[in-house]
Image 1 (tube, rainbow, N blue to C red):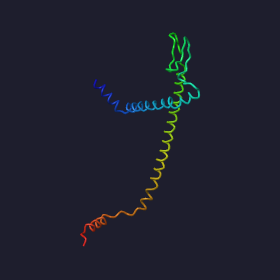
Image 2: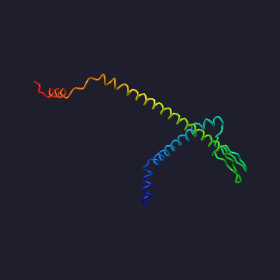
Image 3: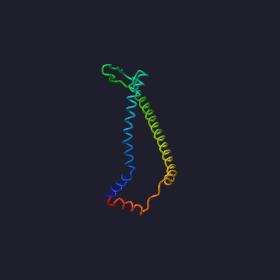
Image 4: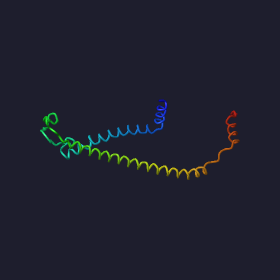
Amino acid sequence: MKKFFKDFGAFIARGNAIDLAVGIVIGGAFNNIIKSLVNDIIMPFISLIARTDIAGLYWVMKGTATFDDATGQIILSEDAILLTYGKFFQSILDFFIIALAIFITIRIIARLKKQLDDVKELLLKKKEIEPVAVVASMPPKPTQEELLTEIRDLLKPKA
């Protein structure tokens, strides 16, 4: 049993599990952002164009179904069977919007990384050139004797 916990501790300490946990938490937060984008921003525009809520589309295969305007719910007969194809279309639309959002995010991150790498490369090139010019233009350092003489002169009582 000791070996199990020792191996588990080594697994956790490796960093892979921590990276995975961080990825899952960030993925969950990103998922909430995308769901809000789809449900609160994009779908109202699509519903405005289509004049209906896509997720609410259905086909009555058997029995009867009526829509109650007061409650906004579908009232089904006991033997009613619905094919709710609107939810399926909504899931497909969500998938494409999520995929597009991830693609755009990755593309932006890649561009920023490339710009950062370009700036790093430029700075490294400048470091190779400028320090030589800076060193050449700096005045020579004072010798130890000159520094001691200056300290002595500062410490002399003013007469």
